[in-house]
Length: 428
Image (cartoon, rainbow, N blue to C red):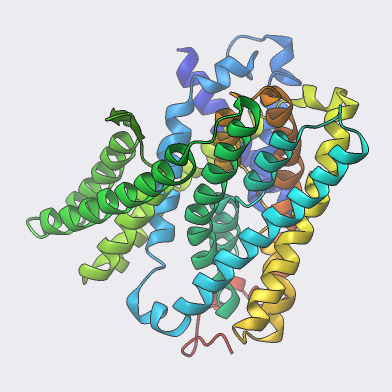
C-alpha cells in the first residue's frame, strides 16, 4: 500500500506542480524537481503523514528501481539520435566537442580546487580536488532530453547537444576512473595501472559490446511481430532486460568488471535505430509510454536531494568554487571546441550553457569516491552542486535554446508545429 501511495502522490504532485511552472514559464523538469523537494524528508515528508511524502531518504532510495529504469529509457532515446545520416554531417564535431569540453572542465576545476588546497590545506586535499575535477566533467542527459522534448526543440545546436551529452558519459567515465585511481595512489602511496587504465577501458568496451548485441537482438526479435502493441511491449521488455544485465558486476583474474548503464542503453538505441527500418515510428510509441516514468524519475530525484549539506559552510565554500569553475569550464570548453570545428556563432555562444545540468552520473561517481578519506565531503559537495544545477539547469537550457532560435515559445504560434524541421540541418 505504501509503495502505491508514494508512486501516485509523486506522479500527481509532479504534474500539478508543472501547471504552476507553466504560468511562471519554467520547464516542466524544474517543476518535477521542486515537487520532489516538497514531498521529500525536509518538507512535507517531515510531517510523517501516512502515504504523503517521504519521511526519510531511505524511503526515496527504496524506489531506486524506478530511477534505474527511467535512466535506461532516457539513454535508449538518446542513442536513437546517433543515426548514420546525422553522424555523417556532425559526427566529427560531436566527438571533438564532447571530449574537449569535458577535459577542459576537469582541468579548470582541478586547478581551482588545488589552488584552494594550497591556500587552505586543511579544507580540501589534493586527492579530493582531483576526484571532484573529474566528476565535474559529467553532464546529466535526462534534464536536457526532457527540455528538448517538452518544447520540441529543433535545429543544429539541439542535434549536436544530444550527441555531445551521449559522448560525455564515456569521456567522464574515463576521466573519473583515471583521476580516482591517482587519488587512491596518493592516499595509499601505491599507484595501480589496473584501476587507472585497464578497468575503465574494460568497462567501456564491454558496455558498448553488450549494448550493440542488445540492439541487434531487439531488431531480430521484432521482425517476428507485426502488431504495434506487441512490438512496443517487446521494446520495453528488452530495455528493462538491458538495464538489469548492465547492473552485473564480477571479477576476472583480479580485474573488476562492470557496465555503464547509460553507455549500454545508448548503444542499444544506436544499433537498433540504424538496423531497423521502422525504429522511428516505434520510438514515438515508446516515448509516449515512458512519459509517466520520466515524471516519477525527476520527482524522486528532487526528493533525494539532501538539504542538510546547506548547513555546512565548508561544503558551501568548496561547492561554490566547484560550481563556478565547472560552469566556466563547460562554457569555455564548448565555445573553444565549437570554434575549432567551425560551428555557427549561435552554437558557439549557447551550447556550453545547455551542458550545465548534473545529476545521476555525478552522484554515482561521488558514491564510489566515498572510499577516499574525504569521501563524505566529496559526496556533500556533489549533492550541493546537483541541488543548484538541477533547479537552475533546465531553465538555463531552455533560455539557451530560445536564444539560439531553436525553441519558439507558445503564444499565438504553436511551438510544437513551429519547431518542426523544414530542411536538412547543418552545423555551419
